[in-house]
Image (spheres, rainbow, N blue to C red):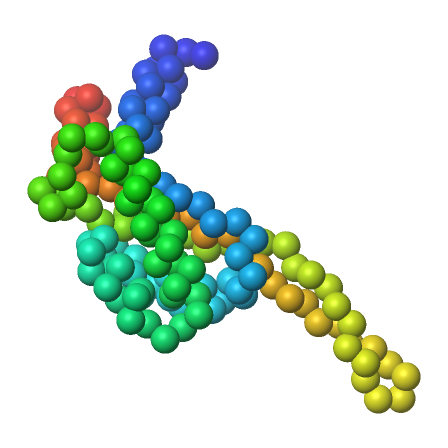
Length: 145
């Protein structure tokens, strides 16, 4: 590995230490329904996102609420001694990908069968401190000069 590539890899590794994430795999909700809820909270502050998810009527919102709480707990584990109230945490990324589909058969008229796909999804939530985000972009601008 060249020195430039090595230095870039080290910067990426340091950046990943600062951000906290949580993953939910094989959630038995269709990806389309989960994306609707994920789009509501993308980019919000964590406290505001938790409030929106708690009072949202969709079934997917309760699962996503639990996932954001898990990401918040992961952030607390990485940043011991830092109070959440003093930070400006926000949902940096939230991605929903399709998981595996269970294939089932439903009987149809005249001896036919129709296929039913019970879809699932994978969700990844990344939370970060907004101040850290601004410092990282400023630091990258200084290193490229």
